[in-house]
Length: 396
Image 1: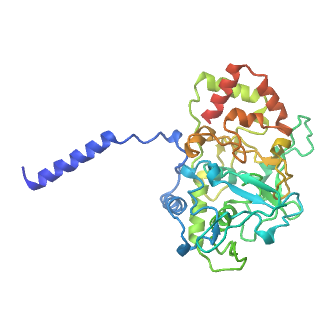
Image 2: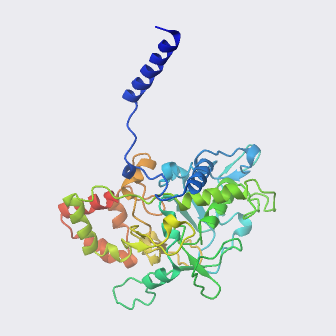
Image 3: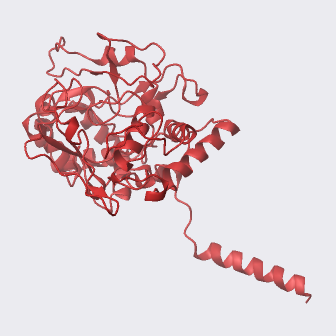
């Protein structure tokens, strides 16, 4: 046997041996990350650039981290693009009503509880209201971003005209100058509809991303140039290209795919979901409008949210708010991807805005206010009906 042939045989042996011991790649519906279908080659390259910046780039003091911060990378809070763990939670503080945040000079709106060597992290002012927030899953955000304002307003019912006890409303917010208005954006006294964040206090994914770099990692940009420690305007520590690549990555992450759709228990569970009126707020189907990204334009999708604020009752009133929302109002979270949440949360559910619910049932039983009728409906279900409802929710 020649030297070349021997080396070739060794390479083939090594390859086939590795393929036998390596686990197969998970099915597409079993993971949250990955791009949506229909991207062009240029868009795919841009998606991959954003993927690297989001998941691989870890900041250090030499590359702009801090001096006070929450995390060292985007991916640290969104493992596999899924929900965060209590370890990666954020603390927002200082606003107890809709008149604005009175603690901006004391570090608000976000607590940076870590610091690089030689600096002290922030501490909460004793009298400030606060809210613990777990990072949300990232997938499907481009679809939510592309729903028209007109469609969201058509879903709202501020005066409960239909008498069902549910009166979803948008969070009308002031937006930064660098945000580009959506096509067909609707204004209310100079304010616009927020649709990201637990209370819908962020207008778009550019604002969300620039704020995350600044507030979560202490990294300045041309969009958010203020240093969170000194409160001075500083040179950008991340480029506009990187920011825009991350925004594009978030816009073009695929939507979560439902599993076990033909399972009889899952089908029955969806019927029960509708029967106890969960679908009044967790609306199954929305559609996108026009989009600069062709793969997102005019698409029907299934997020199980109305993107509106609802009063969730005293158990979920933590005394803190953002924008025009009251302290007990929360934006309806999208339920798609719920069944995969444990994959990024260490094998255990941490649900609701602060992760206090350790199971789907606990989360349901925390619903009050406008969702009281659904909670009461759940308590009247038989054990089998409850089991089928949970199976449906875990299929999403």
